[in-house]
Length: 479
Ligand SMILES: Cc1cc2nc3c(=O)[nH]c(=O)nc-3n(C[C@H](O)[C@H](O)[C@H](O)COP(=O)(O)OP(=O)(O)OC[C@H]3O[C@@H](n4cnc5c(N)ncnc54)[C@H](O)[C@@H]3O)c2cc1C
Image (cartoon, rainbow, N blue to C red; front, side, top):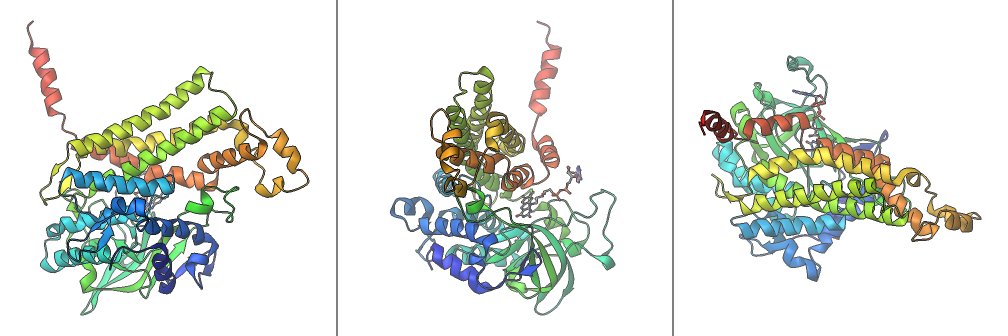
């Protein structure tokens, strides 16, 4: 089947009737019409629709090597640098549609399954490796949407803590039988949980000595015993004047409960092998391919943030002040650095041990460590520039009330009337101050892992021996 359109996505997820809970109630009826999910699902559907728009088709799709049908471009396993550039263009075209606010647009997980299928031999078991390859092909040929959970519940993060198996919290394999492996317990943190066809579960990044936690699989979101417990939604209604970002792009986050869930053998990619679990993120192309996708998206997101900031500066006419210029320049520096790192990763890409054209890891590791630091600062800059304007934001209905003429007049700015000023500042509020904004900042800080440990990974991986040698040579110089 060729890539899907938005309606196919929505119908497919509605039909699943997955076990999704929010605010004490189970979601019944069509999930795409539920207030907590409607905005983001509509935005996600638009991305799928774009695959059929004349000006986008060539960027967003390519011919499947197996069926010859047009399938999603972000499933493409890059074999050369042109393929990498094609993937980047597709990611950025989708990201522009949501201002980079949907971290889990389908390209994120399409990249994950592509990467693990490309290195499927790493799973070191004929059946598991075959399962991973077949699963990738299934996703590509059916445009399957995925959520994922890669971490364990935040109970006790002490390095001395080991969970007592008889009182298990973190999901583990409790049985293996003819049908498959049985999983029981909880996992964190599935963004878009309930909004996707399937859930992909992989071991946590840190090494596990206990083989019951060394598993990887994917199952449909409506598998019996699987439950998504969502957090409070951060969108307040559908009005896009009042909530320009959260009404459209609020991707719910969920805790995932596995209550004696059976994963059929043909969907098991790893079971019981702690050594392979330890290698999955280090010896695969996961990190560079994923961070290439993420950085492509972050360039678009930063462009949008910069656009909003400049609009605030113009609106209240503060561009003459040096500290304002300095603050805007800080964002420009961030943007240009990200773009340079992304370009460098493609220019220095090479074929990895699995035969995949892989972007250079070093600039991407730098980008991955940089963004969790600079994005919160961009948001701080928005608060410092927007000041009280970020809370002088009546709602659209206020403009239609008896006070409408007053607020249109009194809330005007140097370049626009009160209605248009509030529209702009409500956007800045939803980007810097609302619950949606707070979650976006937390997302950029943590979604790819703990920034402290990410820095540790760069410290360990980055080869500095030749620089040390340079210093030694310098110290020995007699001239
Ligand atoms: C908005 C959002 C969306 C997310 N979406 C997803 C998703 O879709 N799928 C998914 O799998 N994950 C998702 N994540 C989870 C993300 O991967 C984790 O937040 C990240 O890996 C950090 O783990 P943690 O949150 O459990 O923090 P913890 O590991 O509990 O860290 C808490 C604090 O303790 C410190 N700490 C803990 N252990 C150590 C240690 N060993 N050494 C040093 N310091 C330590 C940390 O530095 C941090 O300050 C999401 C997270 C967020 C915030």
